[in-house]
Length: 124
Image: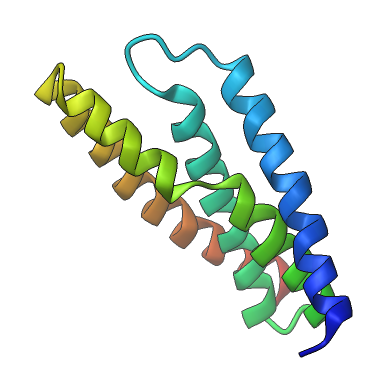
């Protein structure tokens, strides 16, 4: 295991978690956790673009992929907050919970796919 790569992932993770915290603090989430939705959708799109670029043979080396993909975007997006938000919402309102789950899952997959296509097109 290369310690330098581990540090790059950790550095990216620190930046990503700080960015996630800032986004979730700046976006009001009274009835719906809009901050969590935002980071998950945005992160999915950006990661899709990055992987599309890699698939198109863009010059993205392993260090950058680990720093930005695994580290920054891995910490920026949050499955655990999504899971807990879903549980908390389900205690009060099923329809809001259903909307939240659909927006997050379908939106994240759709934006990752769209990002992949965009990244591939831009770099091929």
